[in-house]
Length: 226
Image 1 (spheres, rainbow, N blue to C red):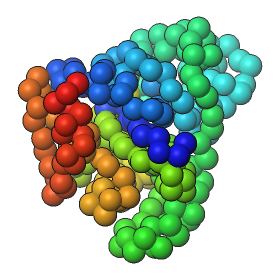
Image 2 (cartoon, rainbow, N blue to C red):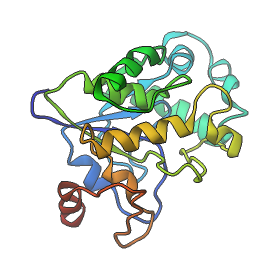
Image 3 (cartoon, helix red, strand yellow):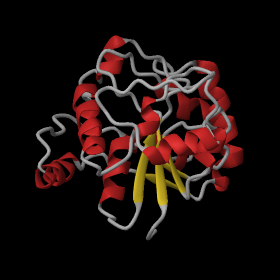
Image 4 (spheres, one colour):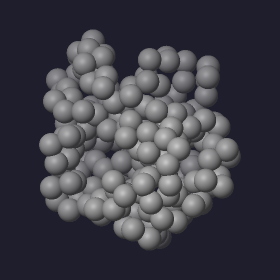
């Protein structure tokens, strides 16, 4: 992966700003959980990182569709969940890799943050996307970019197909959104990653919400070009 541009892509939906060409320009793309390429989120399948329970229910276990999706019926739009299951059965071989991203590594990531001099840490389980970022940070030979993650503590977190209220947005006990946004912002401002794409607002023209972060020249040039 030496010299590769790696993009860790969240599932925040964009309806107005066109992202396909921007996302497809990266060398390696990581998607998360019930991601579905071609939804204005790039057409490349890339690699699919799944949290433990989603990997167990949709990949590892040999169970019926009904058994696979039942645990998620209160969290996801049921039509999306059903359609995604059918789509995944046909398309899972198109991913470069489908794997379980172990999130029980918060202590390891906190040790990395401490070594970086970061004042923030994970107080709860990191989400799949964050563990994917940190696993790529271990490899110093690649450039790591992040797109479609929430940056604003006051913003209700959005994810395609997922039903999220304020409590779920904050993490509902399992995750801490404020930890994650603070860490993401710090990593960007200290040039460990480039999260400029997360600042793009969902408008037809280029509009940036900086969140006290500097929009990188590389991403600005890429957005204008694509």
